[in-house]
View 1 (cartoon, rainbow, N blue to C red):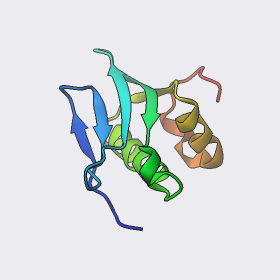
View 2: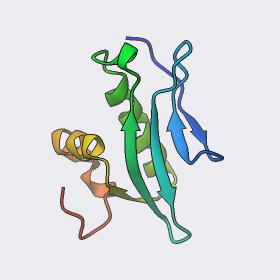
View 3: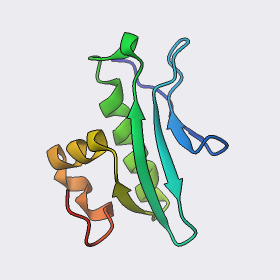
View 4: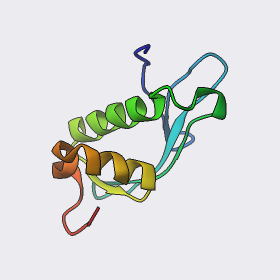
Length: 98
C-alpha cells in the first residue's frame, strides 16, 4: 500500500489524504483547551478495503500526540481502531471509555 501524506485542512476542520481524485478524511472539532474531537471518518467507496482508513487514523493519532492534544474519539471507526491498538489509549482524554 502506498504511504499517503497527511494534510490538516484547518479551513474545513478535517485531516485528509489526497488519493488521485479522492479525499479520504477525518472531521474534527478542536477546543481552545487542548481537546480534539474526531467526529467522522469517510473513505470514498472506490478506496474501501485498501487500509487507507486505518493509515489515515494512524497518522492522525501521531499528529494529535505530537501536538499534545487530548483525544475524544466520537467516530466509531476511530474508537474501534484504538480498541485494536491500545497503545494509543494514552492520548484519549481521561474518563472517556472506548
